[in-house]
Structure formats: structure tokens, C-alpha cells
Image (cartoon, rainbow over all chains, first blue to last red; front, side, top):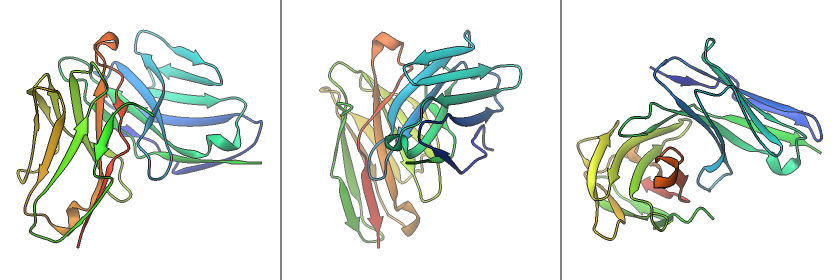
Length: 113
Length: 114
């Protein structure tokens, strides 16, 4: 049972344009969401997060939007750069005593120069 | 560099063998998490330790075990290895300042079982 889903395995965007990566979840108990970026042969790198009490969080070129009623979040990257090319994972946490993360299967972003 | 270190980087072994993966969390982080990433799979939570005690278990096989030592480093022990155990194993730690919500990952150990 995949509680966090990233339905687009890949995305290709031109340099300078907006990249939008999407993520859906099924568990309404999730209260914290994160995006990680991963290059081959490296560990995931934390990008940005959002609490369920917010609907938007911004950090530089990265903005995460949360729509709780739709159980959907998205990551916007503006402007996209070739160095952004990587696999992006969304993750959710139910909070509480454990804070274990449930990850989606990732979206491979390719930013074309 | 996340500040989380993992050794070894690569490990090649045979079926039936036992291996130990090591993780040192970021300075000051009390929580350590282990995740497995198999081919074409997302990261799957295995187990969490907090200040030396097991906090939560996920999809961890009985052949696998872990522990966290007083100096807060952690080891993941994999025994009776099977071909399907070949995967990337990641360790993560989280700071108390964020309530433990943001996890920082190490570079991983790539395990190949032949």
C-alpha cells in the first residue's frame, strides 16, 4: 500500500522555466512533508519542508504547496537550472514519537540547457 | 556534506554471509534512522533508534538487527544474506531543534550480494 505517490517517474524542463513536481498521499494523519533531492551514488539531500498547518513554504527558488483537502503537495522550482537535474523524492511524516518518513518513489527531473 | 557518515561505501559479499554497516550521526543528533533503497524502489524505513533505545520498527526482516551505542553511532547487522538484500542502505539523523522532523542522510552503503 503506497501511502505517498509520485505518479510522474520523469519530467523534462527547459533551463529558466518552472519545474513542478507533484506528490499525493493517502494518510490524513501525515502532518509534516519534506522534499529531498538525490544525485546518483549520493544520499538524499534535504531541500524544503512544510507543516500541515501551512499551505505554502518558500526557500529561494524552491516553493512547496500543500493542499490538505486534496491530499496533494507540489514542489515548484523557478527558474530551473541544469544543476537541478536529479531525482526528487517527497516524504511524509506522521509525527508523534517516531517521525519515520514515508517516501514516494521519486521523479527524475532533467533540466535541458 | 550532511555531517552523517556511513562506512563502508561499498560492500560485496556472498549469500548466507553476515555484514555490519556503520553510521555516525551528525554531532548532537540523538535519533538515527535506517532506510533501504532497492532497485526501482523508493526508500523504505527499517528502524529508528533514539539515544540508544529502539523507537520504531518498519519493514525490517528478522534477519536484520540494529543497535545504537553510547557514543550514538549505530550499526545495522544483516545476516543470512540473500540476493534480494542487495540494495543501498541509508542512515539518517535528526536534530532535536526541529523536533526531530527533518532528517539528514548519509551517503549510503551499497550492498551487493552475489
